Length: 160
View 1: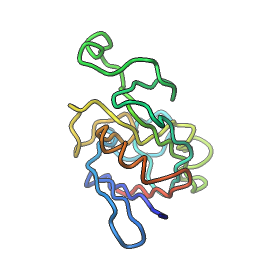
View 2: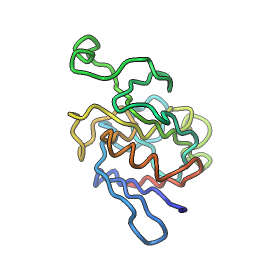
View 3: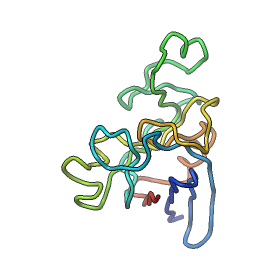
């Protein structure tokens, strides 16, 4: 199945389409700082992207990733207490790359270099409102479902 992902920053929704048909729809949480493409802005980049890497195949829900590698930890309330302020990247990672030169690719607006992902987050993180450091956060069950439906090269359109 050839699909496309559409992410609406205004609606905090991710829609997976196959042609005109909606295959799945999920609540997400994008950047607390809003939309933006600049390096170190902690904003969610807009425009046309694609999935460049898929990380976490077979990892159990709540697997903790740092630097796109599993740490051997499984997220828990105790782990959070011991690591206050940690930006939790859990379960699966879909790493994005921009495909629009000068908008989200190259220079200080490069989505891939900014390490922008679609990824899982702790189950108590509220979806439907901005709150991330630039990435697109999802519930663990949702990101696992999405991961099974897409592949590297899947187009991702992020709009206001």
